[in-house]
Length: 161
Image (cartoon, rainbow, N blue to C red; front, side, top):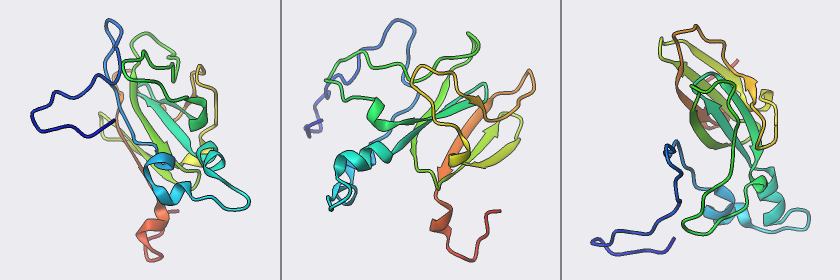
C-alpha cells in the first residue's frame, strides 16, 4: 500500500463476500523487515519466506501451521484465499498470525483456562485442512485469545518448561 494523506479514505484492500468479516491480519516479516530479506550463499529471500509459518487458530480450539509461501500475494480488492476449513458451522477463525518453530503459544479460553505449547508441536498442514485440536473445550467454552511469543526474548533468568 502506498502512503496517503490524513484526509484520505485509503484504498480497498479486500472484497468481502456477504457474511464475511476480517478476523485478523499480520504484516509478513520477510517483506517488512529488511534484515529478513538479506541474501547469502545458502538462503535468499525466497528461502526465508518459505521457512516462515502462519499459525491459524479457531474459536473451537483447532489450529494448524501453514507455510507463508502457500499464500500468493493478491492485488487490491481481491477475494482472498481459504486458510482453514471448520469442523462445525458455528466455528470461526480467531487468529491467523506469523510464528516461527521455536516460538511458544498461549491459548486462553472464555472460562480462563490457559494452555501453553510450542509452535513446533502443532502440525504443518495445507490451506484447506481443518487442523488439529490444540485445546479441549467444554461445550459452553471457546478460545478467547492467543498470544505467540519468542521465549528466548525473555532472557536466561526466566524458564519456560
